[in-house]
Image 1 (tube, rainbow, N blue to C red):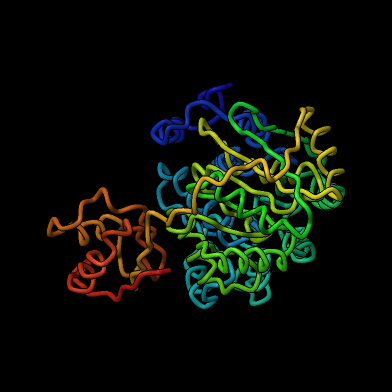
Image 2 (tube, one colour):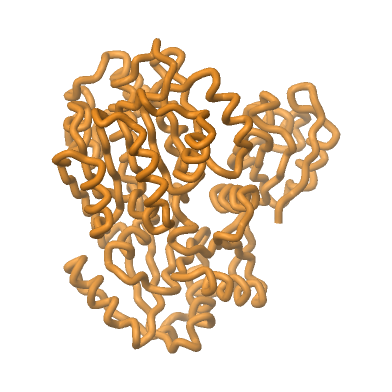
Amino acid sequence: MSSFSNLKLSKQQLDNLNSLGYVVMTPIQEKVLPLSLEGKDIIAKAKTGSGKTVAFGLPILAKLQVSKFSPQGLVLCPTRELANQVATEIRRLARHQQNIKIVILCGGKSIGTQIASLKYGAHVVIGTPGRIQDHLRKKTLDLREISMVVLDEADRMLEMGFVDQIKSIVKVTPNSRQTVLFSATYPDNIKRLSSRFQISPSVISIEALPDSHQLEQFFFLCAHHEKLSGLKIVLEHYRPASVLIFCQTKKTTARVLSYLQDNGIAVKSLHGDLEQRDRDQVLIQFGNRSCRILVATDVAARGLDIDKLPMVINFDLPSDAESYVHRIGRTGRSTNHGLAISLLTDKESYKLDTIRAFLDRSLDIEVIESLAYVGEIPQSEFITLYISGGRKQKIRPGDVLGALTSDSRIDAKTIGRIDVTDYATFVAVERLYVSLALDQIRNGKIKGRMFKVRSLL
């Protein structure tokens, strides 16, 4: 693999990349960056976790005229979670550049606050198609100076019905813009979308098929009416520290959630009916390991990128092999071992044939009864505390950690991940120390102020 130093980047950017630990490019970065830095239109097939944000973030920053406070880079994402992840990464990439303003425009947040932020100008806009279109209708966003448009996870945006919004947004950007499209799959509707917006795009594909030694795959046959009990058998055999369960429909997700809860298993779900605030809380609890089991559809799980996720279960197999690879690619990343379990009925066996052919690998089926009972699913190690203050109150993770450990009753080792959002902070605390932690916050101060606190179950 090539080094970032081989690219036409400023010394300051190279030094910043080095400080971030980015020295050698990932396969997608190695193929995309040289072309993108030259201003070429690109269709790149790459999954989440491949390093694609760096592949489009560096060219956006390289093109910026910092003295011009108008949007010059536009990134469209299918979900608010992905938009936030992209913004966080681009801010890190821009640390060496002074006065770079990056604005996130997504639903679930006050549009009035976003309008006020845009009045002071922005260099890069990152958001979801619906909210970007809202701002265009209100004339609070001007895209006439855009030099680069990125459609991130374009296949999912099309699945979610955003095609008309995407068309209307890109239409008001300059014809001279560069357009880069990233997609985990490459269906015909992606080709049609590209033909509308791109000029002779370079097509780059990184299959990133799973390594059989790093990511183990098992398929278990069970009758349709025994699938729910089969899922319980899988969970009680492997007893995963954390697991993402994929279902094909929202209705099936609800069935799985209800069954597991009725059997005394702690579980949460992601679905389209969740309020954005509740969705954010579920994602944070799963990410900080205070929720061990999460059930979701593909669409609901978009933007969910959990480090070191040990296991994925396909309660339903997806309809195509590429989606299967994308799902199981959530586990077994970097040097971590992963496990992908799939339940299937006789009627779904044709899907396995498709997956075998795509992976060019022998995949065996076992009966679900072959799995022995090991024990009940253990409780989550952590519980999340909700604190009623966040970035707007100038709270930082270190402030919260300091408040919790101020009198030595709580060791810093018992505190997990701390997530600070605009108006709230979420802290993972080891279960045995939750009462102490609640007492510390209720009777103490953070940044000289008292805040409300409660535990999320």
